[in-house]
Structure formats: C-alpha cells, structure tokens
Image (cartoon, rainbow, N blue to C red; front, side, top):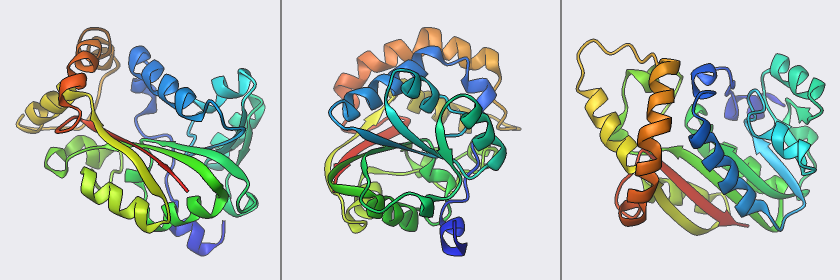
Amino acid sequence: MGNTDSAAFAYTGRDNLEAMRHAHRYNAFLEGMVEKAGASHACWLDFGAGTGQFAVPFTQKGRQVIALEPDALLVKELVQKGVNACTDISTIADQSIDFAYSLNVLEHIEDDQEALNMLAKKLKSGGKLLIYVPAFPSLFSEMDRLVGHHRRYRKPGLTRIVTQAGFKVDRCTYVDSLGYLASALYKRLPNQTGVVSPQSVAIYDRFVFPMSRVIDRATSTWFGKNLVLIAHK
C-alpha cells in the first residue's frame, strides 16, 4: 500500500477475534450470507480478512479468494493456510474482482469513504459488494472503543458513502434485533470495561441469536445491532 492507501485501510484483524470464535451460529450466518451473495461470482475479495475466519473455509471449498489484510503476520499465517493473501490493495489489479465482502471491518477504518473508493476501483463493472457493520451511533460504548471502532452506522449514512463511491445499493437492512436491545442495556451498565468474555459470547450465540434471527423478519427495516448492505458497481 502507498501512504494514501495505508491511511485509508489501517485496520488490523486481531481485535477481539478470539472471543468471537465461540459465536458458531453467528459466524455460520455470516458465512452463509456471503456465500449466497457471491454464489454466481468468480473472483472474491475478503476486505479485512483478519485471521481468515471466512477466507480459509471459502478457499478450502474451492472459491477463488484474495484475502486483503494489512497485518503482515496475519497474512503470513493466511498464506500458510493456503489462502491467497496480501497486505497491499495496490497489488490487486483494478477491475479484477467480481465480488467483495467486508465483515465488521469498515467501522475500524478512519477514512471509510476512501476505503470504499478503493474497493470500487478493484471491482469489475457489475461486480457485487457486501458490507456488514455495527449499527446505531447511540449504541457506541466502551466495547466499541476497546476494539478500535471509529463509528457505528445508520442506513442513510452507510447508503450515502457507498453511493458516493460509485455503487448502486440493492439492499440495506438491520440485523440482530435482540442484539440491539442487549447493546442498549449494556451501555447503561456502570463501570463498563468493553471486554467480551468467550462464555458470554457462547451463551448469546446459542440461546439469543437464533431467536433474534426469527424476530428480524419483522424488525429489519427499523432496527438491529448490525447493518448488512448489498450493492453493485
């Protein structure tokens, strides 16, 4: 990455990833969502691949995935796992990607508009983009600060910056309605540390998240802990 690129994409995937390994249903939901969106597309870009939570299984399934991750140590680990990975988005040819996905990454990047502009350059005409980010600035808490979030999003703001990058938005909806309520309650707790324990993640994932996905069918227009946006170039 050049200097401009590095400033736009300065996210490292190490933040809070260990606890989220226990969110098996949540991760399966994200994996399924990406697979469905990218099913008819050949070359995929994992924008902010981290430890390879998704790039590794997709690669193992035979998908052509390029994992972009600025942490050089994580890239080394990804390559050892058989993933085509790089630290520098400038090494990816313009208009060479059919489908890009970014899961819980954009909120870590200070200049999210420039990051989307870079993504647009890499996608072919007609290429698809999937973005998954935390929702509602009112839910911003110590947990967000601890993991390096710059912001949380609402539909109008996320739609605006994606459109300004040259994409046409197909769908933008809220996800995890019960997660919204849990986050709102958490923010009211005194002496927040922002630490998420593996035990609490596992409990939420097993008992609450499945119910949340059912309720989402009625609430996705109005609220949820996260936003999912699908667009095309």
